[in-house]
Amino acid sequence: MECSLKAGVADELVAGYTARTLDSQTETDFARHLGGCESCRELLARQQAVWSALDAWRPQELSPDFDQRLFQRIAEQEQTVWWRRLFQPRWAWAPALPVAAACAVLVAAFVLKDAWQTEAPSHSQPKARIEQQVVHALDDMDMLSQIGVDAVVERPGSPEKL
Amino acid sequence: MNPDGLDSPAAQPSWNRRVNTDKTAERPLDRDAELMLRVREGDQTSFRLLLERHRGPVIHFVYRMVQNQAVAEELAQEVFLRVYRFRDNYEPTAKFTTWLFRIATHLALNWIRDKRHEKLQDSLDQETADGVTRQVPDRSRTVEQELVYRAKLREVRQAIESLPAKQRAAVMMHKYEELEYSQIANVLSCSESAVKSLLFRAYESLRGRLAHMA
Picture 1 (cartoon, rainbow over the protein chains, first blue to last red):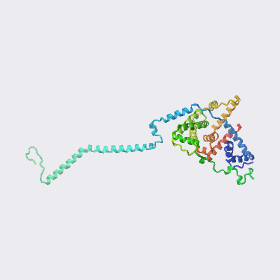
Picture 2 (cartoon, rainbow over the protein chains, first blue to last red; picture 1 turned 135 degrees about the vertical axis):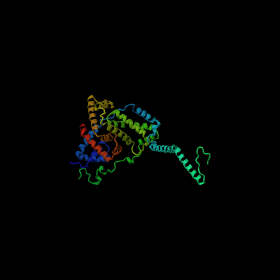
Picture 3 (cartoon, each protein chain N blue to C red; picture 1 turned 45 degrees about the vertical axis):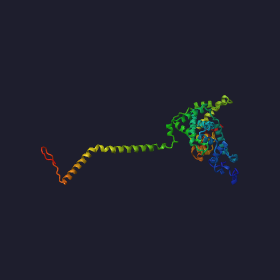
Picture 4 (cartoon, helix red, strand yellow; picture 1 turned 90 degrees about the vertical axis):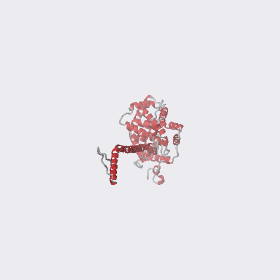
């Protein structure tokens, strides 16, 4: 006879019935169902065989020094040097390090730029000063000619002066 | 008439009336979570108590996953190291065992993934012999019974090893650690229905390989 249970439900009930994890009402209902369903009885028998086989795989004995080794490792972990702690996630500012580095680069760039600007005129200073002196000399000559004083070029051997 | 006599609504089987089997949301803070909160506050004694309670289950679970005792102990140490290291981040939103087995499963699955192609796993013969000798001795067995037992154990281990890693983890948690579907789902980060699907496929495979051992 065909099983009346939906697909998947039989699997769940058989697994739960074998593991004894069904609530009492469901267990009673399924036990009644088993009475009239050969396919579920067969499935249950096979599942119980698996369960029994898995029971044969019993726990291993643990190493007697398991705890000792663990606490030693915990102690080593706790002695982590301070600079490694800085990079642990609990330090909220750790992600800001790249931003700080970028800021440092920008500040350095500004400082270097200023230094270059203050040093740059010192190289062109003599040329600028000569140009300024020429301009001043021409201005002076214009001014003297306007007030009627002619510049006399000093000639060698001539007693006259300006 | 339904042969089960289940035609009327009142007589519907209880599995048809179940709506939600997840009871974790209503559960009060468990003892382990309380201990873990004390560990978070710096109480070493509570950590020792947690270790005492869960050391065995964690090692046995990892051992059945990786089938190598030395590796299992090493991974179990890493599990408890992580529990201690992440104590400040612990929040009792789920059962402590769920959190614990999530760490253990993660480490075991990673190990299996990394070693799958390396064939580094101990030979089953060697490890079986080691496993049997390290098991609590059963002095009531005769030599013949011991040989039968070893053969049976070998077959069980091979059947488990043949399962895909996630199915294996689901079976180990369901069979040996008796976790609920909701907890297994939480550990494996999937839905309850996905867990049931994993489990039932795994049990189907195991029935094919082990049902004759009845």
